[in-house]
Length: 482
Image (cartoon, one colour):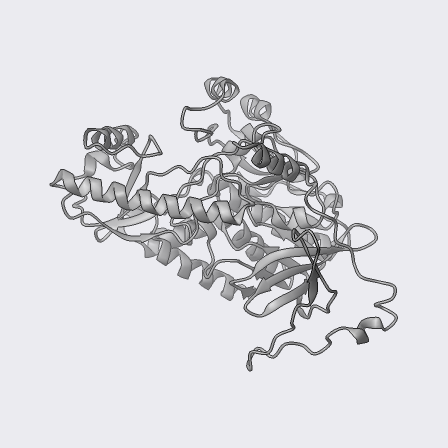
C-alpha cells in the first residue's frame, strides 16, 4: 500500500476528510435567495439547474457557487439504502404508521441480494419477523432448491420482485438510481435533510427520523458522525468479491462441487481449479445451484480497495470481471462436465464487505461475541462466526486467527449500537452499525441486517409517535427477534 493511500485511509477513518454541512440560515432566510436560481428543474423537458463556479489556481479544487436545491420530498422516516437492512427498516416504519421514503442507488431493491447477485442469506435461520416473511416468499415462489434451503438460497430476479411487492404494498415511496451525497444538520446537530444526486439532478429530502442503511455509512459520515474503518490505523479492510451467474452444467454431475452438498465442496472445487492451472484469488470458491441450469459462482477477491474510492472500485470491478471470465474459460477447457460452462451475468455491483463503522451509543466487540453477550435491549440474536476474508493474499493477522480459535457464542445485537452517538435523530442498520472490526465480521451478514433494519424502522416510527428521540425510547426486545 502506498504512502498516499495510507494517508487517505487514515484520514477517512477519522472523518477528517468530511467537512460538516449545516442548515443555511441568516442572509439566505432574509431574501438573498433572489441572487440564486429559483426555478425548479423541469424533468419533462430536460431543463436543469446549472452549476457555476471557478477553478482554483492550484487546479486541485473547484469552488462551486451556492445554489438552491429543490426539495423532492418530505416524510416522517427517510431510509437511505434499499438493501436487506433498508428494506426491513422501511417496511417496519411504514407498517408502524409512519410516512416513509426509501432511497436506493441501484436500479432495484435488495442491494447485495439482487444487484450484487449474492444468492445466499447467512445467519437467517433463527430469525422471525420480516426476515421470516422474506424467506417464506422466496421459498414458496422459488425453485425446489429454494424450498429445500428454506429460502436462504434464492433467485436474485425473484427477490427483486418480492421486495418491490412488499414495499409497494406497505405504501413506501421509493426512488431508485439515487445517491446520497450530502446532509444538512441544524443548530442542535440533528439531521434536517439529505442531499442526493440522480438523473433528476441535485435534490433535498426532509424527514423527522433518518436511517442509514447504505452499508458504508455514507449518510452518517455526511452528517458529521465519527467512525472507524478496518482493523487498525492503516484501515486494512476485507476484500471485495464479484458474484456471477453461470450455466451449462448438470447439477447431478457437479454435485460434489456444490456448496449445499457439504462444506468440503469448496476445497474440492479449489483443488480442481489448481489441477487445471487455474489460480483463483479466492481460495475457497463457492458454487451453488439455483434453478433450471442456473448456478452462482463466487471465486474472486479484490484486496486493498477502499469502499470510498470510486476509481479504485471501478478498477476492482473490471479486474474481477476479467478473472471470472478467465476462470470459466479455464474450467471449460477441462472438458466434461465443464465443457459447456458459460457466464450468464456478472453482478452490477461488486460485493463490499467493509466500509465505515459508525460510532454509536454501544459498540459491539469481539470480546462480546466470545462471551455470548446478552443485552436487555437486544434487537436480534446472532450466531455467525468470525468471518474475516483474508486481508491480503498471504492470509490474516494473528489477532484474527486468535479470535477465530476462541469462537463465537450466540450473542445479542443491542439497540444502542443502532443509535448514532452524535446525531440524535439518526439510526443505523446493517454493517455500518457501531462495533469493532472483529464483531463486524460476524454481524455484517444479511441475515442479521434485516432484524437490525426492522428494529431501526420500528424505533424511528415509535419515537415520532411518542415525541421523543430514538435514544429516549424504551426498547423492548421484540418476539420477532428471538
